[in-house]
Image 1 (cartoon, rainbow, N blue to C red):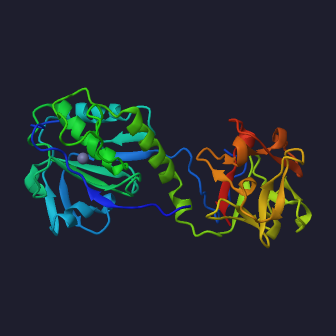
Image 2: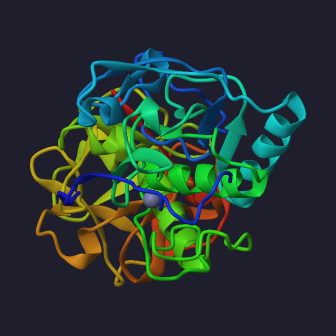
Image 3: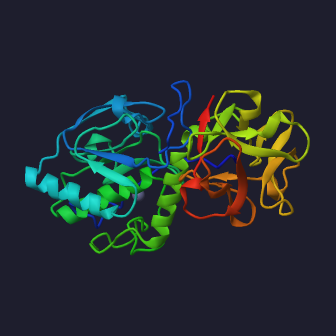
Length: 351
Ligand SMILES: [Zn+2]
């Protein structure tokens, strides 16, 4: 894991032209917690009911705490409810939803989770004493945890424009910065904001996809390196150093989980997956594709990447693989060209 540059910027939607508007067979025990939530989707709550939002150093939508309010030098602000009709509101929700079609993002009219992103839609610029039509926290390339955006809807006469503004602010909450491409929803404020054909371009969607992938791994990112874990295969068996051998080349098999030291692994910043005394999960081309334990040296054949779908990818496009998906104690673990089979899906859980 690398330390990324994390800047909190504040978005600005152009003011001028925008006139108005716009499984596995065995569940982990309760003591284990899944690292990976490969199916997780980002929930976006569009709040048209208004409410009081308080200043805070970090956003927390569920508790109405907002870094934007703080940044604007206010202790709190009262946002009035969306003043359009029910039909207009529902059209807006559908329009925002369609802006994110194909991405793992769900748009809701009701609060559904503490982890959701919130867009408060209502009132005018006086709400946050700003010249802009919307404001959102932004951490480039990252989903702002529990982030809140505000979009001032009173000036909008065209729902399509309001929809663009809301999608734009959600884009910021999902890690997008402004760009030079005026066809993109994140186009610079100097772009023509009357252009209703703007949509997230392939470039923006690619950034969205990768920030969401990182968000899915956020638990892992916040887990100190070296935290003990087990790696479970498709049958719920654990990755096990054969006979608890400590020699270089000790084979690694799939075995019923027993919480022994030879099933205990840890993930490290250099991409290594370690067990015991400085032994690393290691792949050698010369041993029938098998993986084994070897003294850690951090070379390419000891570096692994956990994918959101549960794959553990190593060198040369090879993934950790339970050979032929065998459902037996002693099943061979190999590194095989990555494919989408269940025998290449692993669940990483805390001990
Ligand atoms: Zn912006």
